[in-house]
Length: 258
Ligand code: CO8
Image 1 (cartoon, protein in one colour):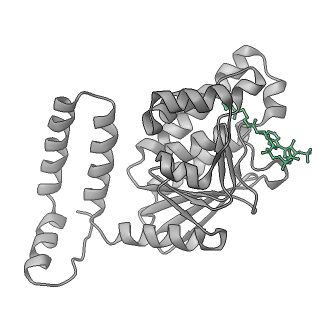
Image 2 (tube, rainbow, N blue to C red; image 1 turned 120 degrees about the vertical axis):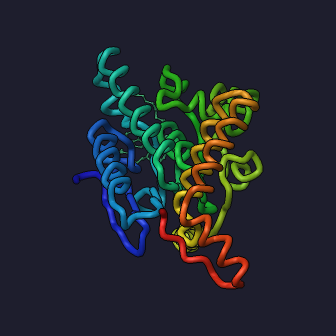
């Protein structure tokens, strides 16, 4: 792949958007490579957690590639939107947890990519924003939907209408990120979170992700019904027996994902 670097170690698949000359802006081929990398990690039984980051010290992803967008017809623009939405949806619905390691600018499509991940960790220099209206467009990789769900309708409108950048500490207080750490601690923090998750039963993590995501799109009672089904799936696993037995035997559980 030209624009994406993939490194797999100790159950973690690190995916790096690698176009530092354009602050890791997403053109169509980068989106398609990202899709391939995510699908490959999904199929690889050794991979338990994905981390997505950007190359360099300045930018996670500074948005969709404005040069490419400037050349597109409206039909081609629509196609690019659909590709981005599809790839980010793949990340959001992946049966494995995905952590965004946000190492700088996360603007437009970059903020949208981060929001599609399950957990967001930002370095202190990270800056977020949805500056699309400056270009005469609106967020097109589901930013209007995910930002309002994450930080609320009024704040989403404020940041999308004004294009004000959101500094890392403000992103933390808005609930746009879960943690802010010094730049040089970003990767180790994300890896430590991944390791914590890998200690748990993979089916339980998968079911928890599905129940939370599904529940947010439906009403409370339907969400509770979905949770009961997901809970029952966990209850039928060997991991459940192992987890409970380990607790009673005062030892660490050894989950096998079955
Ligand atoms: N696309 C293409 N190139 C970019 C992008 C981008 N999004 N961002 C930065 N670059 C390039 C610059 O053109 C520059 O290239 P060059 O060195 O050849 O001039 C290089 O990266 C470095 O950037 P700057 O010199 O501008 O660096 P600064 O430190 O001065 O500024 C900023 C950094 C503030 C991040 C600035 O680069 C910037 O404002 N970038 C654009 C941010 C933006 O508007 N992002 C939103 C894009 S729209 C979007 O994401 C829509 C998503 C839905 C798309 C639907 C599909 C149709």
